[in-house]
Image (cartoon, rainbow, N blue to C red; front, side, top):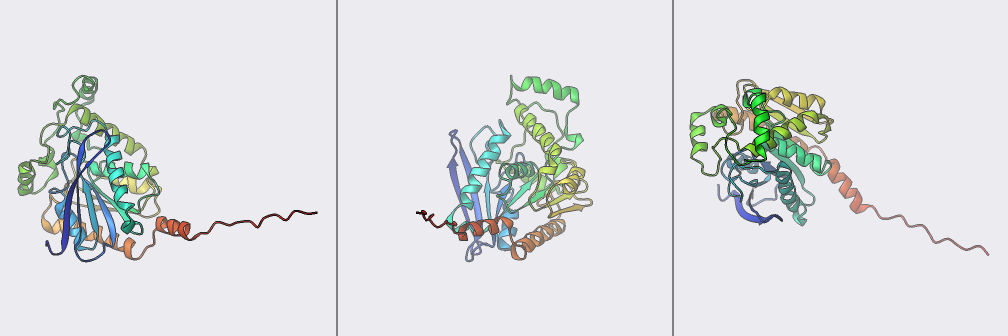
Length: 321
């Protein structure tokens, strides 16, 4: 595999002084067909949790780039703490844009891939720059948290009041996400053994940020305008598959696809039996291939037109005598 794939890691510093971990997987001997940017889920990270996703995409010919959010994986910050979802989006936007704007990447298509909470990050990246991205792959996106994942309303009200006093406390009562997200027991054990994954109860401010963002996204599904595919397990108990279907029905996008997999759980790309994972990736890679190799990108066409257009200059007026 090392002969086929070039893997690199780096730490970048953001203006508020934190260091964030970044990584990339690219074909070792060929130019990537397009770029794919990973947005990982809550309590997860890129280099281990999304490695298999990256490898499958690189083998299909794509360059893949990831970043661990503040408080996640190898990045700085209190583990499992998301003080500001807006800052997470800004960090991803700044890093991903810096890669896209490199000279060797200027004419490459750029896609976002977000899993669970990463789906919410993806949709806000699109909202931040509506014309910048060429497409999106949403894997069980957090457009709405499943009702079973939310504490009772009275508990939510009390916790919101406490957020300003004890924002980092791990006291939000929820089901064990690992148990209900990963179908395979071996995968649950793998995640629990990964020191880069956060395993405690959600911290107060983190839970508030996630709840607010999911409510915001659910109310603004119609604003989504880029080409996308959304894939969701029919038996997902973490995020609501019916809202993914609603996204596909109400989004402004003219190119939109919804795939529902009966019997599959939340972690479609890693927590299912391999035959199920193969089905999901066959759909994802087929979608990418069709848009990378067949369909032209409106963004690229706009940029190429801008590069080739020459300013129209009027001839100087002749003064009449």
